[in-house]
Amino acid sequence: MAMSEVGLVSIGTFTGGTLGITALTGYVSPRIDALSVNHNNDVAMDTDVSGDIVRLSASGEYLECQMTLIPDGTTQANALKAGGKPVPLAGVTITGLPIVAMGSWSNAWNTDGADSPENHQWIYIEGSSRIEKPDRVVLDMTLRRFVSSNLASGK
Image (cartoon, rainbow, N blue to C red):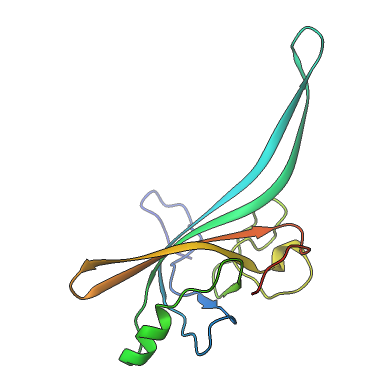
């Protein structure tokens, strides 16, 4: 475990992670440069006749992952493969990251495809590409993960 400046133990050094996109033939996982996962849901508030909130309920729970990726590889061909993006709603797996609990997920970042909320695949929502320097291409990707596995994905 890595130590922070104030002496607290952190999750650890972020040194890996692999993306898998079966919808792309020959896909090579890019290097994960940054990752942010947000836990989302809808909260409904019920009030009594005087307007006081008497009950809260949550529904529609999901995780949203924003990733910044660097498409590099051992060869130019592999770097180009790492720059690919799937069609909308394609399934994406992430493996090799620290195990972090979030909401209904005991392992919010990683997937293995098993039929439980913590293992459901991420679903590709959207992405973009940009050139930051003449020699640096950066990809941004948005993925979502839902509690239910009964969603259409994996085109």
